[in-house]
Length: 235
Length: 299
Image (tube, rainbow over all chains, first blue to last red; front, side, top):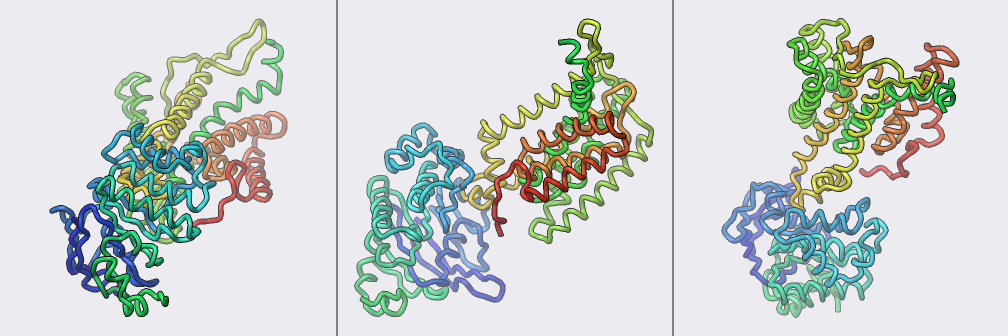
């Protein structure tokens, strides 16, 4: 369980997050949705220690994450697939995965087997430079690289960005499967609110740095006002 | 065979190799630092000199050659690590000129400190190898056991560095930290340690170059003695494109051989102009260098 309490983040004079509090239950998918500039990416970067908050705390199973170094937070078992996927293009697929496994809990060989089973497209391309992969394959590689370290929490920043609707659906199904089969805790940041809400258990709606809603996903999905005002979904 | 090895052109190539590997190693050090931290380390030659003098300084206490040789490397590494931690780290994210100015300052400082402790006269480590050229039949080949040792140690070092980067987990993390520091941290890599380690490796490599310069009977090292090899190593690294370790090595060796030909066929005074001419022509034809693919500069 990740418990975020009173979290505020500023970029100079600009408040990116204002007194944000919510909980991420273990073994569930929590979607964080909202329009551009709502503070979604900032939230994930703050959890991973890349951004330092001006106030608030982030408690992960009894450990305070605020003030810890990014690499130590990662070693606590928090995987983070950043915005734009962060695949190292000059590395081969295999080298990307080796890097992911290095400070994780599992063994490389077993991890590779699991990830290639989960993402068969990667197995055929293991010797290829990651820069030659398609957008969907890069997303798979980024997820596999985070998962091979056997994290207990996975932070996903806009996995659907730039992907065709069918590929997005595949990615969402995979996230759902991981959560159901392995008890992975997922924080799913998405601008594509509807596809995130289809797999999420809970949903937090951010609006220019504030929590506008925090409820079960189906309730948020059904709320006409939220959809219109914050999510920009008109149907 | 003997006649071929003793021919004028082969002799020029062989006699250019020792200088060439020195330039190549300096260039390699520059590339390692550039790739890791985007700093042009103008103090690399001086850091190498500092490391070598710590070894040479010990020689005046009658420490044997092999100990000097082996001590110069960690001495260079420690100097490199301290430089990164104390001088360069506070300047990350600042304008690019800041670390350059700091490194030029460090260059002056190291040369002054070394001169005041050990003096400015030439010093050398007397190696346990002969400087007398080998003979093949009745022909003299312009290669001595000492030169062979110098070339071989550079080759072994370059291969070891290559293997470290290519085949080990540490090398994987060193490369990842240079290419994608933020992503590496998200995967648990201690990036700041890797950057320090990159500087240490680079300065260790450059220290070996300084040891090669200082191991001889007639030649030797002075406090400013690495300035010319640094200039040549810089040209070698730039010709290779600053990003390519192999390019810097090949560039350095080619430059050493070119020097030897210019000295033999033209005039020793034309060595530097010709080296610079090579740099200018390469940068005009391929501004990204000979060995790197063109990359759009990441912001």
